[in-house]
Length: 241
Image (cartoon, rainbow, N blue to C red; front, side, top):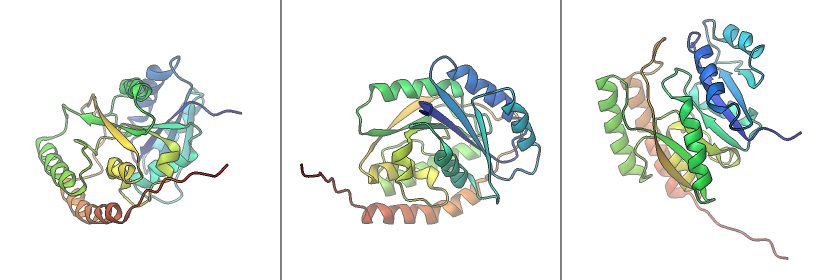
């Protein structure tokens, strides 16, 4: 049995009040446009997130739910969802509702116009709805990352992305890798395109990150990704007839 054309992967941790509205928006954006599935990955939430997802499964046939046995973080949850996905292409969304599912068809349209070597379509939050301190910290981090990695990407932290599943699973895996997908795709010999998308205020719940822990982790990650890029090699091969 053939799988869907698109898998929408959503990692969540303690997002009980955001689950139902976001699932409803994904269905509204995609049903009737593309054959799709929704793969939620619950990273051992301690609130009612899992119970809300179980209830929604009875109402939304496209919804699948995977739960981590141990809490493992956002990058691992994304990778778990991509591994479980049955679609050849994967769209990701943050579970807090700040990404707009109505942008997924826009990313699909960009893919359909692009050359075959473009394997990643990354959302670009041109009008961010975060706090001033978050925007300043993000702007600084993006400038440092761009200078070190030369990934020609204005916004790697945006949760809404569209990529080829096979290309993603060939990338080196490490914690927080989801923040470096453009650079990692380019290292693998693929191209990425940034697409302006909508960004919204968080309606409920609280952010799972702060500026300090992002900065401390980011310094180590940047050095590691820069090393991977220096040591990477892409060698095309052909089979003799």
